[in-house]
Every structure is written in structure tokens, then in C-alpha cells.
Amino acid sequence: MKRTKICTAIISLCLAAVLTGCSSNPSFKFNMHNRRVTIVTEPAGATVRQLRPMGQPSTYLGKTPLNDQTVVVVTEITKMKNLSLQQFDGIMRHVNNAVVRIENEGYEPYYGTLRVEEGETIVHEIVLQEKPGDENEAK
Image (cartoon, rainbow, N blue to C red; front, side):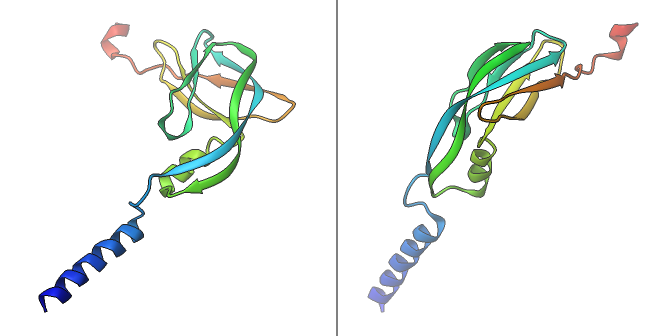
């Protein structure tokens, strides 16, 4: 009887590990290629960083306007393993897109997904929104 309970507990733990996917880490393989993009902001002089999937460090692209700027983008996913739905969505957002954070003092940060095309420079015009100020400052 005691042996049966131990075997049942071991089988339950193994089954739980298989069903939750905790036996290995999430991973994916992909191809990347250079693309070109122009980013213009209103107002100009905003800092642009390209964000990377799965928490990888961002890349500083420069200050706007950025004309015919090279960006490196994921163009194809060749293998995925043990990804959560949230991780999958985050990776797919980067396929054939430049995901950016644009910041300028006194303005709300802009997070966006910019479409890119092979052999083409796409122009993206972005109007930054002013941060709400203290109403007493205007008086």
C-alpha cells in the first residue's frame, strides 16, 4: 500500500513536469537581415532605440530624424521550443518589423512596431505626445 502511494506520487510529479513544460528552457532559432527605415518625429531630436525579443539588450539607433537607417530584423523563425503564448507573441511582433522605443524630454515615450520591407526604405512619421504638466505651472 505504501509502495503504491509512492509510485503514484512519482508518476504524478513526472506527469506534471511534462504537462507544464518545465523540463527545458524556452528557445527559438531565427534568421536576421538588414532593412532600411526612415524615422521622423515631431518634435525632432528624439532618441530611438530598437528593442529585441526575449529581453535581449536594445540597440541605440540615434536621434531623429533618422534617414535611411539600417535596422537588423528577424525575417524568419526556423525553430521554437517550449515558448509560452506571451513569449510567442513577443517574438512574432519582431518578424519583419523594427520594434522601437522613442523618447524625448517632456514627451511620453513612444513604443511601436515599424514595418520594414526588403529592398525598400519605409518612412515612418511619429508625433510625440506631450507629458501632462501641472496645471499650476501654466499660471
